[in-house]
Length: 377
Ligand SMILES: [Zn+2]
Ligand SMILES: [Zn+2]
Image (cartoon, rainbow, N blue to C red):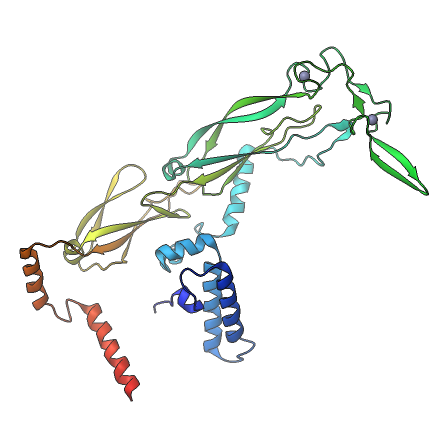
């Protein structure tokens, strides 16, 4: 049985905003809620459908896929494959944490002796679908502050040492009495470091770090998803006064491909097929990401919207040797700018057409007749 269009179900237009969707869903869900319609199986089914429709349309990514592929977008993901689930994004994070290792928690930012963990850095990296397909080693130039080499990050002139702060005695915090209360706050003399530099390092003016551009090489595994975050431990800003470095986060985004759409590991491609090939059957050549062309058989009598699945020609699946599938979506092209002879041939063809050659029109117009016939009674 054909599924009802999600937009129709929610009684909104295809351009409905998030707010419109939400209020439409709320109104309809209220009306068809099983609690309000006890024992009504139809209402229950409708309520389920509404829920499903809202879940898809309220998620930007799922909605885009639905707009493009209709219900097919969610039917061919197959059992167990990494589909749209949000869980997938979080499992990706784990994968990268495994890859880049060492994520023991560091505790608070401010450490004893005023050591401070460096800031985390964010690097936005855009890659093409082909690069996500093949995987790549990306070279990044990251401007970042690193520990000053001259003073090994202490900020004190080489050969000299930071002295214990006389105000707080190295504690980093001072106590002040206010009435009955004793309040502790950061030492104003050393800003909580517990020590003061009397003889600052000349290379870094006592900061303990200098700005450099570093070149990093990052392995982008084949099959990465848009929105993946790669964490490179300790590659962020240098810590202060010997504190640990921050981390570098690489945020991956995928460029839109001119003719391929991706859903998890599956790829979709709309391919125009001539009216004649669709009617008589034939072979078409479709592009695949591994660079080769792939020949696909179009069966006789193919209609627009038919989906042809080509196994294992989709995106690679992370941590496996498997690939998703490539789906060819046939669009039968109506010919234009016909010559006189072509028109003649088509008219002749039309004269020989029957219910058998146009089964879809025949059944549609039969339904229309039934509908008007039935409603007249
Ligand atoms: Zn220095
Ligand atoms: Zn102090």
